[in-house]
Length: 345
Length: 256
Image 1 (cartoon, one colour):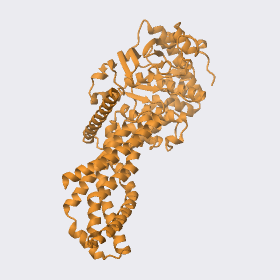
Image 2 (image 1 turned 120 degrees about the horizontal axis):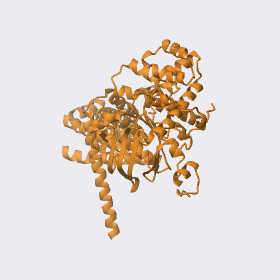
Image 3 (image 1 turned 90 degrees about the vertical axis):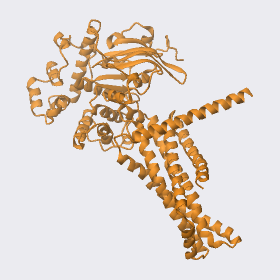
Image 4 (image 1 turned 45 degrees about the vertical axis):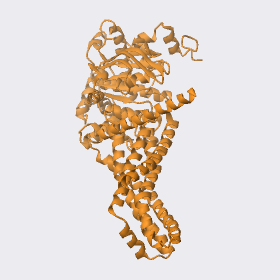
């Protein structure tokens, strides 16, 4: 699916830029991917009326008005426009922060992993955390959800300081999160359906029928429909990641943390996962924080980038700005040069 | 000399730290065990794993332990002309000592090692972290059901061991050595009192706790990949086995 580079995309319509996030269908109409009549028909004939926003794309595909790659391409173009708008707006109207690190220190096995880390994650945006291995990225992600406690400093999720919460309060904050772990962390003894259903069965009072309905919808969203009977060891790396993503999505969280969602995957599956993240974001507008080594590709898939280096934030800002940063360390990292401030050999 | 003292000191600190962590782990598990939601299905699943799936090895061990005990006992008692006491000797040895101890050791080898390895793998594959992120307490979901299952399954396994062991002794005494079956069983009936049985059951419950406590603790705190899991499993089996034997001595000396 060839995609035009961001520079060839049309000028941003100011009205689109200022408007609240549009439903997918309207966005597709505005981007002239489908007509208004086609959208109306898709909405009228959609079987799952309670989940219109989430499944309208699928219905349009079923009706033959748009192909799946074309749908994803439209969403990608929309994300690109949003990224440009985000950059233009960034200085004048700083985004609302949902997670904030204040002077966070963390040492592991005598090594300072986070060093007075100050970090802000914008709400309802896709944020990528990048940096060389061992720079503290995964540790940062684990701190966000309280899996690790800082030696010093404070972490805020909204207006809640994680370090000062009781176990029950922390659990309540955790219900706002979902996390995709590097290896997926699927339970080996359960099939895909049970894995995805697990958080719903354990933490909600939904009926089994409702749970299975939601699970099937989540599996459809990640293109794993009909694979629910398979066990994790019967899945490929990409399928495992998608199953884990379905488990992360099924609880309808506010914030999704993705720890290297494309690590160890071939370029096609990597691209597919990026499209899936974009698709998820466009449908749900969740805050997505992801760690990625897919540089420079990741700059096209996120609004905001944080560069972590030696436990500190080296740079943080809109992806377009960071991509063209003049900082020699960032330049070296993006290009993958051996020669530069980062000495690895 | 200073190096020796330093080494001794570091071992002492490590021992005290580990013991303290184990007790904190135990109290946290007990706290979680009484907190809703109560996952009965999880407990039954673990009873099936620790209890039912250990049955074959328990029966096999019990039969041969009873048989060898009868054989050895017969030749020893014959020297004193007291072969009529073979039944009570086999039964008391099994009920008071061998039943709980061998059951404990067998469960450690079969189920305890699997518990440690399973939790260790879950830990290194971030499945324990995944539970926490979902707002599910791993101590409540993973550890408490296993500990409760150990407490329930071990006495049952020990009773089965006792019965099969006595029958194994019967096979050798009556079928092989041609002793009267009436003498064998009536001796048991008159010699075994309720206190012998309760002593065996107290030991069984204690060993069930030791096995599941040590093995879940080791697995839960496994680190550093496959090697860490293998170390945790080995250490869980060794520590559980040693603790069973040490506790056996102290329980015996208290309850005698």
